[in-house]
Length: 205
View 1 (cartoon, rainbow, N blue to C red):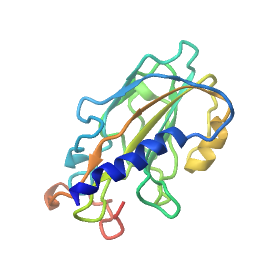
View 2: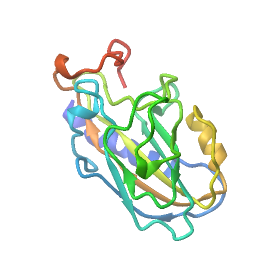
View 3: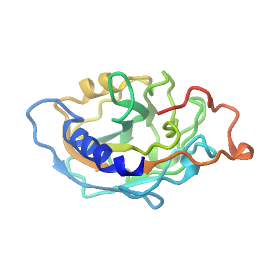
């Protein structure tokens, strides 16, 4: 199964170039990083249902000076019918934010961390406005594409947008993009760390 990684990676890299079939604009590129993840490296299990399913921390730098708002999508181009399967959507992030902290609240009634006040979740592939981490079929490796978009205006979008709705809303406003793509393969679940709001039986993406 590990021998198939180059095939998955080629497909995932092609997906990076096609994540935004928006207008003819040519956004600049910037750096997206994480203190706990790297492109092509295994995501820590704490960011999956094999652990406590925390949302991972992200940082970015080199955004255009005109950035007024930021949006983030995490998606698996090796899953979904049709792909991609969406794990996380968060937008209305202030333009001066430098990243996302670890463990953003699950519940919409809980306040966002101070540094991203005003940010809101869209609906993931399960139809839920929250982060849900990777859980690919056992003995398979999937790539998880974190796409970060710098916008030239404050759109103040409503909560619960789908991926397609968000991409439509930001069309014409994207002035910069950054990407990172760690991988994940199922690891033994730690039942003592799994939150009560995780749904394991339906996670295979």
